[in-house]
Image (cartoon, rainbow over the protein chains, first blue to last red):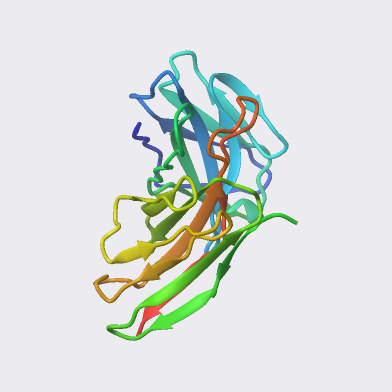
Length: 112
Length: 117
C-alpha cells in the first residue's frame, strides 16, 4: 500500500481558503487518492476522491498533478465547523475489498 | 435512511472480561471492517470481511475475534487476551467491486469507546 505524508497540523481563519498537501511518491497506476474528514469521537467521513487533474464537489476540490506523486485538498472559505482531522489515503481500485490505511492525518484548526 | 450502526456508544470492561461490540449496516455493502483508534493517532485495521462467512486479519488482530454470519452484521469481540483494549473502535463498510463511476467511499459508524476499569 502506498504511504502518504501530510502535515501534522494547520491553522486557518474563518473565510480563508485552506490547502492541505499530501505526498504519495510510490503511488501505483491503479491507485486513487481519497480524502476523509474526522470530527472528535466520530467516524471518518468521505470527502472527495480523484485519479488525476482536478475534481470538485460541493465540499472541496482535489488537485492532482500529472505525476500523481502529490495531491492538494482545497477547502474554500472555511468555517469553525471545518475544524477536524483530514486524512489523505491512497486506495487501490482494482481487486478485492480494499484496506484503507490511515496515517495520523492533518489536524486543521479554524480560528475566529 | 441507509447507514451503519454501532452499539453501544460507550462500553466499560473489567479486567479479564470478553466484550462484544455490535456493527450493523443496511447499505447492502459486501465488505465490512473494524478499526481501532488511539488518542491522537490514525486508524489501525483489526479485521475485515469481504463476504459472509469469511474474514481476514488486519494489522492488529491479536486479542480480537469476529464473525460474519449475515451480510448486515460484523460483531467484534475484544477478548481478555487483548492487553490494552481501551480505545475508540470504528466499524466501516463498503461495496466490494463498485463500478468505475462510483467513488470508493467507505461508510463509517459513529464508534464505540471502550474503557477498561
